Length: 96
Image 1 (cartoon, rainbow, N blue to C red):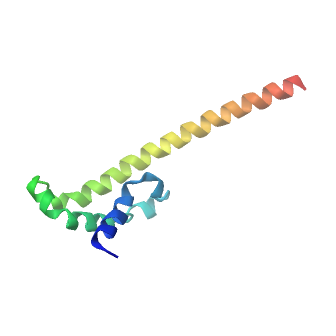
Image 2 (spheres, one colour; image 1 turned 180 degrees about the vertical axis):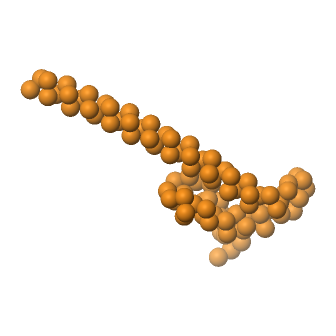
Image 3 (cartoon, one colour; image 1 turned 60 degrees about the vertical axis):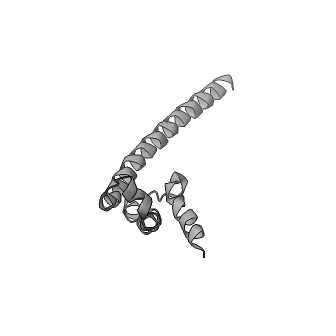
């Protein structure tokens, strides 16, 4: 695999659809691929005064933040869908 292929593959960690749903799987998720990205972009990150050692900590924090928000959105969707379904069933049974 070429270097650019490795970098493109590593970028997939930013697609939330690829994230595991269970927290114990989420903790290590993407860590190795993030290392590929920080190694590849190390010169650029240094020029931008990025604190490279803190990147992994920030990655862990963003995974927790996003997973909580996704969980809340999923719960709202399920509740909304469930209520709409209940109302439709109630309406249909009232007609019958």
